[in-house]
Structure formats: C-alpha cells, structure tokens
Length: 111
Image 1 (cartoon, rainbow, N blue to C red):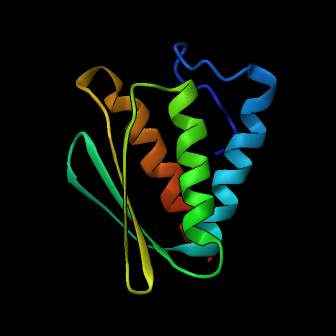
Image 2: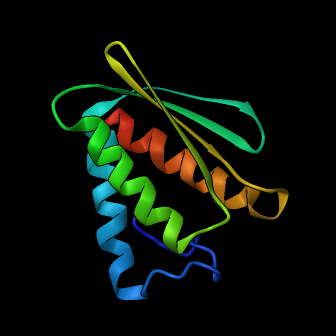
C-alpha cells in the first residue's frame, strides 16, 4: 500500500516527509509486530516484540506522530517481552484507522 491518499488533510507533517515516516513505521512493524487486534471500531491494538531499543523507537515515533496528527490517541504499555501500542481515534477519523490497520497487517505479514 504505497499510496498515501489515506493520510488525512489535517496531517501537519510536510507532504515530502510522509513517505519517510510511513517507511519508518513499516520497518518497525515488519520487524516487531506479533499481533494486531481491533477491540472496537475506533481502537487498534498492536503488540510488538520487545528488544534493545524497541520501546524507545515506539515512544519516539508516537511522539512525532502525535505532533502532526493530533487526532490519534496513543497508549504504550510495556510488558515482559512485548511493547503494547493502543491507537484510538474519534469517529471522524475511523477511515484513517481502517487504513492504518490494513497497512499494519500488510507490514506484519512481511515478518
């Protein structure tokens, strides 16, 4: 899914930087994603295999993403061997979460 048309207009990240951010996210997911679930339509849950520097990478990515797409709510929950990442949105951005879930699933299949 290389088309970035799903990125909402309200995203504050400069257009030329978006492919780099997406590639960074894809790399992390293809390396570390162990499970993905959708407990509710507006909530995506990811579990990433922990390892040296993984939690820091997740926190850095979440911080930067929060700065450009304030409609996301991120919760990071480290546990033994995993870094949990919960992503929530409001109803107006459900389609963005749908696209993110599809992209995440595709990246995770590369693992």
